Image 1 (cartoon, rainbow, N blue to C red):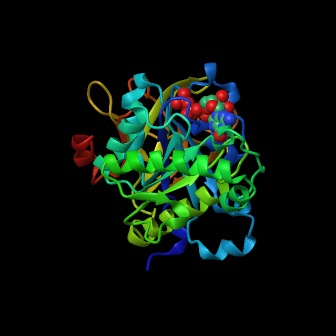
Image 2: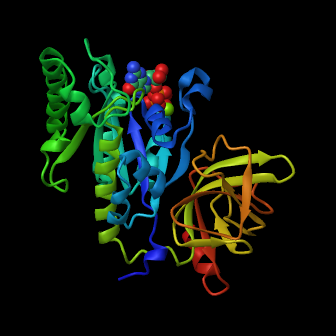
Length: 340
Ligand code: GTP
Ligand code: MG
């Protein structure tokens, strides 16, 4: 068995149609308010946030659960739902170990819901479906942050029936797309059947349930991938090339495998020849903050996968968003330049 200290943090991509509540769901999980800072509340980039396991277990409301999980935390990737951003969604989908597909239970499936499912099918990514905005079902009486079963019990029979009808429309659509699915508390084997969790990202109802299902998937992912401890040479993807005051061009990177250290030689894709440079500084966003919006970074000597990190190094101007970045040694440099 691999050293538990070096377990790789699973990457969880949040996908779905525009305005169905992806960023709001993440805000609820992190305890932040990113949505309110977005222009027209539309996400236009890929965001990345690390959420440590302790923060997640806190939301489950039972500290005893902490020991059940070997997962060190989750790296959440937010994607835009607007139709213009197919490339960003595929990029997010390609990076994901696991995913959350968010669908507005009142609106049902929309073009980018289907698109998200296609991407996840293509990469064979395990995922959970979140049927969001249950607080907007007619007659629903919100019960802040309660688990789904508890809030469901408090609704009238009419309202319960309304939810079940809408939920079964979602389950039917998933079936049409080739996925067996059911309300998550009726699923016995999450490897075979998709769990659908009814939630409200605004009131927090059902959020503990989403996290529970997600941690279950993350645990299975790690058990299957324990050999990928995060100690090898770093491999990642460039999310953004950004000009920063005093640093010049920097890269926001998702490191999805291995370790990246200050002073490492890295090879990065560009329009012409790959860039070869030495890492001058590694900058991490504060805990629970998203790399795209962060203004305060702390310098670190190394990062291990999966993580979001800003890289400062000479000669990054020509780097391309979406291209690979890899750590090279003297022996592997030529081979890695050729691969990149
Ligand atoms: P894009 O990033 O543009 O694809 O949208 P998104 O999926 O991130 O949606 P976002 O989280 O920005 O939410 C869109 C709108 O729906 C916002 O006004 C949210 O406040 C609202 N919203 C999200 N979740 C819920 C919910 O559970 N209930 C209610 N009533 N409103 C919600
Ligand atoms: Mg968003």
